[in-house]
Length: 272
Ligand SMILES: [Fe+2]
Image (cartoon, rainbow, N blue to C red):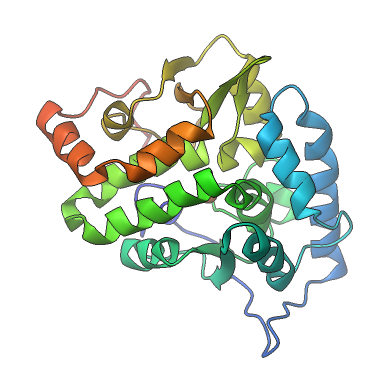
């Protein structure tokens, strides 16, 4: 997830601590932690047909995640490197914008390595390893998607820090909560949707949320909250749109969004 205004915001309280790999890059997980992964992935995979876009499901097959244990980051990186030259790196649950952008700009995806407890099985505000690895890494095998995330990181490094929160919105409405038109209808590709059974059904099937044609300036102008089902999604036509976005003037889009100003939120203010 993007850092500020989301799960990595500085005020977030977390009981979770990321696990550090040993000198060979291996992270030891307990039987209970591996069982949590098993139960999460076993629940989520049957939810995907008809809701996740075909490219995403194909990419998941490429990743070939183990069902009975949390995948090691080296295993994940090996598949990503073969496809697009990306890798994953372990980070604490909270990282700042600069580190986040630096990692993405160098084709490294930051991954918090803890897994949620059973008490948080259905919903967790922090990004855990199930969200990071299952939700985020499959589309990084697609060169168009990967090119966008790399360009996003580079734009973040070039942007004025006052525009970081605005850039976080672009990430949110694409990488985290993006929808895509397909021949069979609207389908999901965003990691926040893919790692949540409830939001997967809601995002694709509910008549409650608005589903707007993707426009980068509109995405930059649209506020979001991390702790509710999204009232607004943006829909691309294919990953080609993300590739085109990667070639476009992202800083120019920010400038235009600043000129036009923020949209009013379509959700109630968060209770204090
Ligand atoms: Fe995320």
